[in-house]
Length: 272
Image 1 (tube, one colour):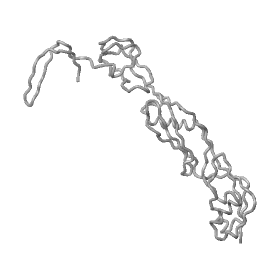
Image 2 (tube, helix red, strand yellow; image 1 turned 135 degrees about the vertical axis):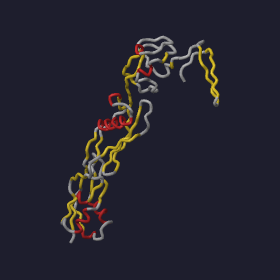
Image 3 (spheres, rainbow, N blue to C red; image 1 turned 180 degrees about the horizontal axis):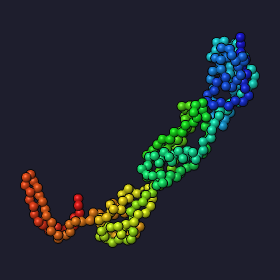
Image 4 (tube, rainbow, N blue to C red; image 1 turned 90 degrees about the vertical axis):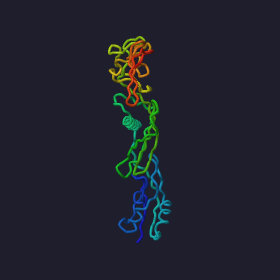
């Protein structure tokens, strides 16, 4: 016996493609033929926010190439408007996920990092799908370069990518670092009175700064340094332990022979 295919007027589907059974009533529904053609895929689903029209001719073209007993199928008049069930993903959601990914890559505590989007991300409607729902995947787009970083955001639905974009961020990092408490003169041996700790932005520093002030104690300022200057390893030197015209011992060792001499130093010298 034959079956009648009657398209429904409006249908909302979940998957990225839809079958005849989702958009039409097949009468009677309990026959082997009806059950078989109900599983046939008619088309890919429309994009979120759009409508796709399914006509009797589209159904006939699909069935004619798939069933031998096509003559037993009658497709009634009518047309079905197909939409896909969607969920709106906000631009703020993309930005939050991008920030979290970048934080996981940086060697700083979250409170020491400011991550600022450089381009607004628009809200996006994406299909719900037939599985557990849309999944957001964030990966590196490129390496951290100075104060900027880009990440790639992809939305996966039913194992298919439905959205892909690049998110750009400006990165600012902050730390408590050693700075000059009061202007110091050339030749000053640094101690606790010369150094104070301040929270500063270090994004563009070359990481030669000091987060432990004790590592500066005993070092010398080879030139005048103004108050508030960030102390880096390029601004200080090891204090000399040998001064010009001071007596020094010179030890020359070769094999089992040691030669020791006393001499006058011609210039200052530091360890190393």
